[in-house]
Length: 143
Length: 121
Image (tube, rainbow over all chains, first blue to last red; front, side, top):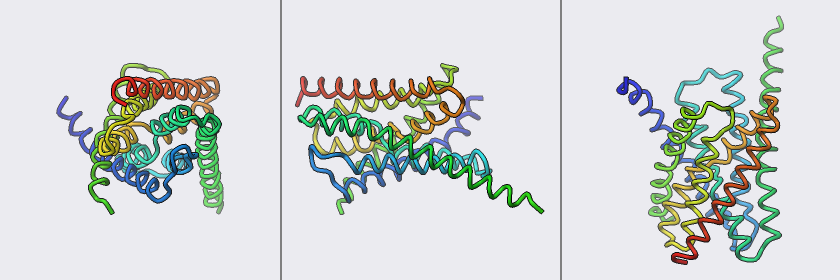
């Protein structure tokens, strides 16, 4: 029993780790490409988080409604790549640091802007994907 | 290109992402609710740990901060779970998820950074 559970879980853990490394590299690369000076508005991580939310909206809408994917696709890309790409801890600590370093306006703006951008991104991406799938489904259903 | 830095980030993420997956599973197995406590747990724990890393050497920042905490926590799953709650007519739970996650995550970051300043920064 335990043996079977491990045999089931080992590949999942492996693809989650691999995806997480790739996602974290993407985020690290973005922070090198678009560095933000201390005390500045953390645009790069805001954009990373919003982009990751938009992509997960498309990806999970596809998996839920249209795509009979291999069982490792979701843990690899959803849990691994997108989970590793986006970050909550950097968001929280950047807000704390902006407050601590005497930029309360930037801190509050960033604190509010990230969840707004993230939720708008995931909602609009998931909705647009479902609509597109349904339109296609209707067309294909017609003779 | 400094490949050692990429290795440090990758090593941390290779631990952080599976740790998030395992924590989420363990929390789900213990609490049979629609509220996404698993993601909440990793996000708050990761924010505390990243706060504690305030002032440590940059190599430790890369492996434990950018790599481990970055991959342990997630914004994409957090917002997707919030969207699902809102769509399943659980608007109150969706709002509570956002409010609680932000309050607890921020509180954890302040606590971690405060402890770090007291100890070593």
